[in-house]
Image (cartoon, rainbow, N blue to C red; front, side):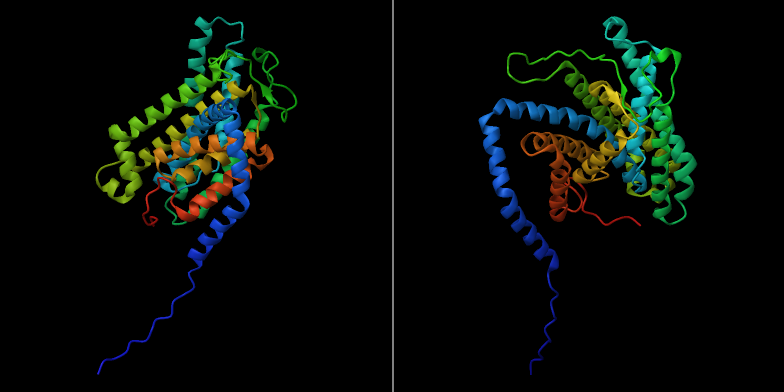
Length: 363
């Protein structure tokens, strides 16, 4: 006589229902705006190309900052909330050096060009050293206690310290600054227009200036150099091994603490370079500029797959382009909602990000 097995009660598939509801929401509320956007893009293709180029420029510096988040998280699984404010300090440091060297738009390019390279390298060294010291004095002491919350709270605290350091920096007035700094710390500080304001695509109806090319070019060089370093060098392999399994890496003779410090150094250097590029590109620096940039860069890292270098680059590019298109075709006040809405939709269907590894979280 055959025995009958009781039917196992099935739970309500809430996850599938949630995905279906999101699809319905997108169809009902986003279809018409998307159709209008496509019509506007087709009606004025030159404007579309212009916004894509703006998105490319913004995405380049966002990717630089995002890599700092993804490098640190990929190895120690720490969300370094102070990273955006480190980018801000890079802008202030580079502005100070511009004043030290008395660089102006009238400075000949034979002098201005090499000095800007010196400023870039010095800024990267400053933010890299500062990030390494924060790791050594704050984060390293908390890594072995078994709780990530302490390190996370410390990162938020360091963020406030950096932000107030930028606020204090704004009060300073040096004889060699030629009035660049002032008594009003909250007001934006002005960079001199050191990049040529020349449209490289003149006559095409599309604007892509020399300073856009410089920002994109320097960013691409730094991104490519980091990718080659991590994938082809011995220290890069040590970083990847430490990210995979710290205990196994230590057993293989890898100095784990030194490798983690290297991740902070590289991330800090990229944040400093981005701060200088954005400061010279926009012409201003302000003590709270790191909040928005850090938020979008962290979003880019999550979107691409936090812990994945190529994913951070892709996420930065996508965030830059989406923001530029939203500014033009929707409204600037809705841009953050659009960016985070797209992030939520993608994470619902791809929780690890576009290029993230679908593996279990490490203990």
